[in-house]
Image (cartoon, rainbow, N blue to C red; front, side, top):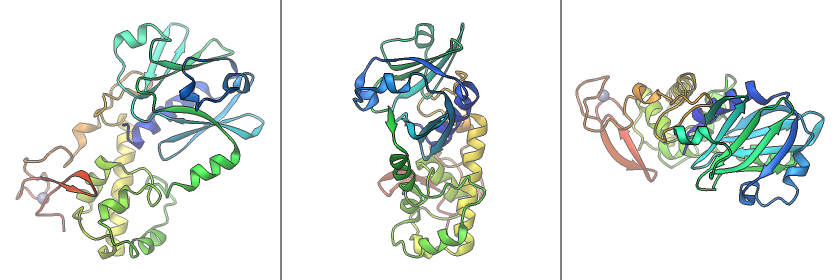
Length: 288
Ligand SMILES: [Zn+2]
């Protein structure tokens, strides 16, 4: 599953390609990907894309002069978007082999959107967990309400976060993975953020000082922004909308580094354990 930086990379690239474009045709090749909406295609035809927002890993497409009509997009396990304009094809979301890009739509294409300028956007999803769903403003508000603040936002409320941490008896790792509490930090980024802030993943959330709480969020935000810049991690053979594989893995300090010497203290080996039900990596020496 892509982490938030991969989804953000896809969103940023789609923004530059389809905002302002008018949809002239929609083909639904697999109704499950539209949540079996009976009028999916006819409702979208004629609408012009105004913006693509994102909350967590959910993309929110809005339309010009349509205050109560949205499209929610989620890649889930294997979803990917391919944007095709004339003869150049670029893809994004997950691995894209040469065979995938040569012939679109292909057997994994679930929905295709065609635009007035001749461009097309294909939604491919091998395992069919992803979707493009039509939603009302109320449904969008509900979806937004399920997510906490994102560490990459400049206006992150540290005081409120620290206060809420004091009421959490779980591990700090479990708290950071809870998307309704802090949105966007997946398993990889939580391990990296806790390493950067020198906090053990199994520490009780309510034992963190305000300074530590701020440090871990700052570190998480910085790591996520860096990952967005370099195009995401490559764990799922992720490819951005230009078909480039993300290369954030080379910047990871602890995730997947079990058995290697800690790059900071150089006194202990990175350990792998299980915290909050997830594979967890940390330095037993310099994380307290
Ligand atoms: Zn260390």
